[in-house]
Length: 350
Image (cartoon, rainbow, N blue to C red; front, side, top):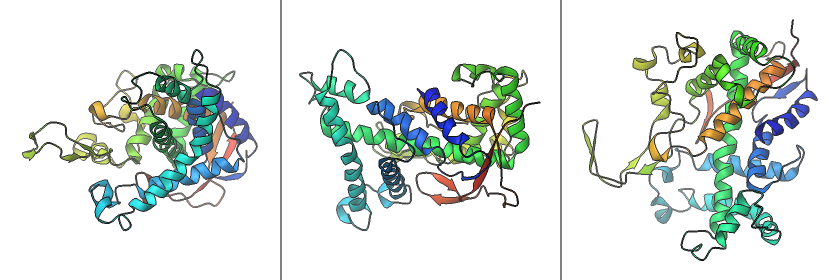
């Protein structure tokens, strides 16, 4: 599904070859389509106004629910100051987002075939027909919320991965060239890379991993309350129900571990044997039972998009353009770079 959707997206990219294009959110539609197909067996056309509406709502929702919001640390503020805490605004966007799924769920319910589920909505509706469904939370309100969660958690993250990838590839053309050389040697010209090629593409995987580590554009893991306690941590006693957040960016930029954390150096993830090397300090998806459930899909999407794009295209800055900065523009749930433009050229192989 991911490879098929990228192939359609590549046809869209071919129409803008040689032209300046805005790199920020360039990949948002293909990401939304993958989620939409998984959830509801649907996809957006690239000029679909409904797609833009969904994208705008998702973007605004993530901006107002980030760590800068007092509700992030003090959820009870919604009772004391629902307006100034932003809780009322969150409810408005939450309702708007859920409203997008109502007609789709109704259509699925009317055409449901329990013996042939088409997607996530069908699977949920089938479970909702069981006698204990209500007790297990299989109702329409939860279905809409889960659909919302898929888009909130899965769209901005993968799209931003590619935005940062484009930025770093134009800043480090030598890295881009090394990835392309590896792709040419392993994959060749006759087909696109696939996720199954990953074990034979250690440098490509190292670049992908270093992009995530270097940018750490999800700096904080989602807060959770400790389920046990009191617990000892670093000389402190944490009572049960303490709100705990993992500072992912701190782990990824620990100078004592990485040595040169502020340097973009994919080779740090290549072992002496030339193979990809994992690192316990690399934790972009969190830790333990509360780690991100979408890790497998996110890795597959990012690897597929990055490898396929660099296999087909060379990415460069427009002539005379100022080099984009790696300084972040916005601190919400995600760290984003300033807007910048790139040019995609068809690769010319020797």
